Image (cartoon, rainbow, N blue to C red; front, side):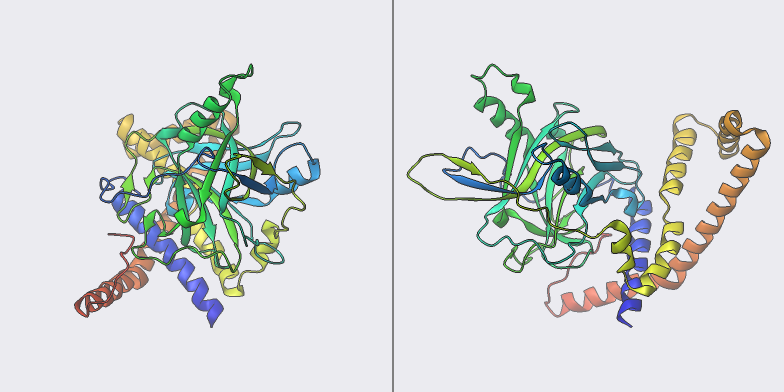
Length: 402
């Protein structure tokens, strides 16, 4: 019964996100800043003495460690809410870093992310540590401030939407690195920035939104997931977008991700880095999928059919052809046939287009049926429950649609 309930919850979550994205343009009309966040944290300049313990090492110190570190992460982009962004963390052979790169698009979404796969044996032990650090360099451009950068931490084995996050100021970290090496003969533009995010700056979020009065992060039970997000969404109680967000290509080169602790030692301003002992073992993507409940494994293919990334991209292409090129739907379909004809011939192009249209019609019919049978009744029930709770003076979590 638990497995069925979990699977059912995943399907409902998919439906809610898809419907919300379609209704609201995937948060495209987010409100302006309504609350102020705690100051962003980025630089090690404020620390008197620090010890840095890498958890994932992408340098050339050990090639096997470098490869395993890169293989420990999976992508989690905005396709889950109807977006078409695409990114990955990949090992770069013979280079002293890994590359987290991709294209972030605001059409239907607006974020790229990566997170560790489930740890195989036990969660990460963060006892005695004060936060997470990142050694990185933004190679794609010099406008880090036009994106929201976040660290993500999870303290349980779930993989749902509620996690702890903290924004960090990558631009400031880069500037601090340049100042620190201003007197060197090396190219200051190539210096590696060190981002430091204390655990006490992480806050509980649901999607891109802060949960008011959420419990503080407690890492004594271990850390089950570490992740990063590049987003157009500012952490806030209400859905809030960054003004002047820069979509498109990005390339963040990463040397290390790990823990740090700092203490007073008489003002020596020393930093000590320890070598990684062993990369935490994670499940492979295939093993992680096999560990899902049976009901969820059976239902996920249906969810992927309903919320296909390819379908999202086709929908985006259709929007561009109709809104920007002013084509009718029929002419846009003919454009697709002509485009494919060059590589597969007219007959195959027509057949493929007919197949795509048939699948899209079926997908739309199934979605609308699920909305009528499941989504709308659940929304009504949820709204009723929230109204009753408010009348009783109880705290109510905002829905994703508010």
